[in-house]
Length: 507
Image (cartoon, rainbow, N blue to C red; front, side, top):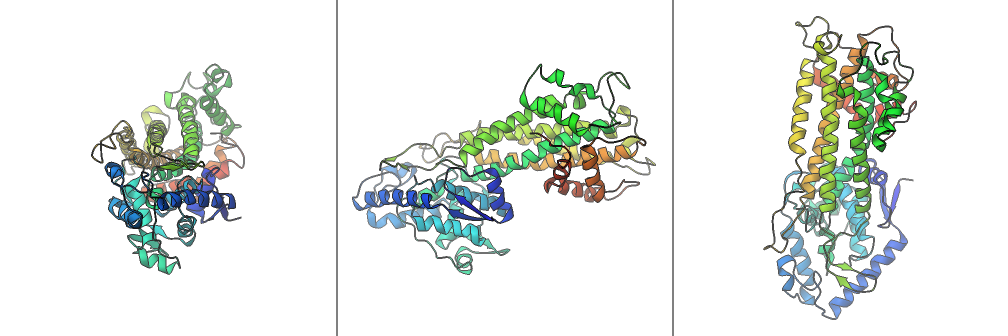
């Protein structure tokens, strides 16, 4: 099946990735359609009876006390979109844009937003037909939702703005025409239903969380390779230690390292070569484990958010229209700040293991892992570049959620900065990926300097995958090309997939 059915209640991270990265189609369930129609009927009744209800027959934000006549409702909805489309900066990638649309459609499918079924189906067909609105990354305060970027999402539906279609950036109206979709004329409540929510921050963060799961597995694999390359001590991973401090992630990590290195003759026992290792090896369970525990929490919050109603006002099943604050991004803002901090630590400890691999003062290997040192620099500047990324992560890990700035004439006087937090988290994860790729390549190089030893059952598979793409570096090469190859092996899941054919890596 290459179709994902949505009903607002049980969308998963795996399904999001299938739509965003694998081109799965999206469909509404019949039950969701019925709920959307019922909710819309309530809105139509309000307009027909000239009731004064925020967001339906009034202005927005500070203009909530301005009543709008029934005949002006359509003009109000269009004005809302075009005036709120104030984003700037580079555009979100297509996979993020698809996720934004999917999450907004899923929220609307719950049937509490008062949108017309036809409008919702147009949004879904934009996903299915490959229309990707051009959405600038910057301009959201994260409350009242992601107003500016979501307005850019809606513009092509109205024949405005720009969209990518078949690899070409086109005016929104032309993109819709080429895809065979009708331009939408929004009616009461629809504009607000489409743009008042946390779907931009959640889209960015959801994909980042999914990628973090892979990176946490890679972190354990990288650490295991470095442990073998440095002839580290297995005793630090003895389960009898970790049961005495039973944090789940810590125990999982220790078990992973032992499983990955099972059968290895590289690793040693306490006192065989040295009494104990440096913290970057010995404390892998404690450091990696803390990030795993953090990710478990963050993932649980994302799974709630992707199946939540986050617009305002909310149209209840009983016919009431209630103004609240579900659009406020604070639950996601704090979660994505936490994500950035947790993942930044994976690069931090990885870079320290990298230093131990290349620094001859800290090991018994050739300086900078190269023959004919001096003539060749080897892995010298790989650590330099990794250190730069680690330091950048320290800046990016500063929390966005502790900031706020009032807007809309002080009506919106506390905001989340959740979209900034999500974007920072994504950028940190990209840096982490590169640092881990560097450590893995260096550990494979170090392993090749040692002869007569056997790798563990799991690390052997990781080593083989790397060596299929990058050979032992005899003399200086254009290093970024080799690093790119390993980075790609991480990003496409090749390393984890190969290792998990032999050993399950637990996160």
